Length: 250
Image 1 (cartoon, rainbow, N blue to C red):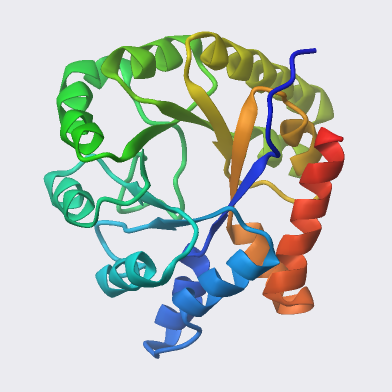
Image 2: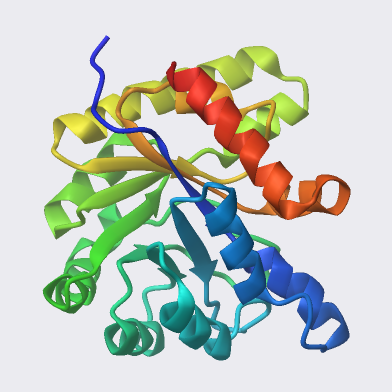
């Protein structure tokens, strides 16, 4: 098996701290405080998705994160002119282009790149020129990965949601088939020279098989960790995820 230098990075998504805050329209819990706790607990980066409808993370949250973080910010965004302008103003370390529909509860699948290749190539070019690493949140699908490579993305983040859902539903044969597809597409993306990340729906039960893929260099995990924080505290919840990831790589 091929191995790569450096430990597997953990990006902690703080969106749902803001979800809890916004449920009461209050000033707490504060996503920036969560980001600092995540840093102290071993997060290598912070992920935040500024949605068009601002249902969780706000513009002020992004302003604060850019001012206070000592680890990189991964700015998740839809491929819209508004979000491009915000990203170009802040110039975060990384931007991750995700699909977004108003009616969805969470991001439901990977970005459709192959059918929008020309538009997306022009969309990400200014972001790259500004110094942002451009990531595409994508299904583990060969044509989509090839298209992401052609448009000039430096990174792909493989959508692990289907794998996690199948595990939760007890459909273990289908889960294993999806895991194999993820494994193959991680290797394929790496073979094209893309940096490979993964995320969506990962839990303590599902993280280790994904963390064991040698081509994957970063996992982005949020909703589960915020949920576990209710019972364990945010720092211990993140530390346990970090332990499992390191164990899988060992």
